[in-house]
Length: 253
Image 1 (tube, rainbow, N blue to C red):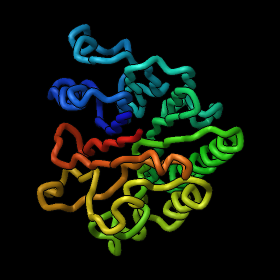
Image 2: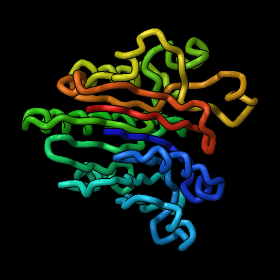
Image 3: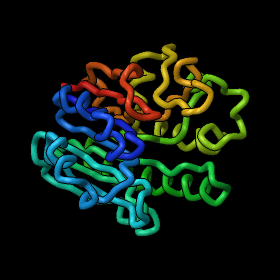
């Protein structure tokens, strides 16, 4: 099974740059897009034709903001929009798809850079998700959480860790919540496979940061511990353009 995640920073802009051609050419079993910034009905007929797989779409109530879409080869056994939490679900940040005992969360985690209220909202989001996943694990489900976590976990995951210790995305309280997932049945599978590898998934558009190698690893696959033996590889496609993020690919048996 092949799963690709990508924050496209506006699906209409990505389609205008033919950026998604790369993703569909990989023939993924599931393609998880974040920050689509549009409602499905806002796509033109030409843009719809460019979408090569069936999909499910969760848009934010606020126009031009947030939103996720999951594309798939095989019809899921179950599709769930959001996390049964109106406070979060109004922002269109979560799609759950389930095939047999495998549940895939496609998530665009909140960004905390607009002030302390958004940091608090982000931490509450992490807490609600972990509680939900705990219940699913108790019911015997295996889980993959993917998307833009908007947090770098460890200093190795961003270029200038010391300078960003007070920046949302690398605050101690944000990093602590990522660690809580790892302490409660999940594995950051890229870091498990590549403990010392320095590779990023996001670069600011300013100051030619991508070409200069000044980035952050914000896009993850967290997998249930039980799934680890099935994981073949995680690939960060940092040469693929089209967004300020790059796609990340998970391969599993």
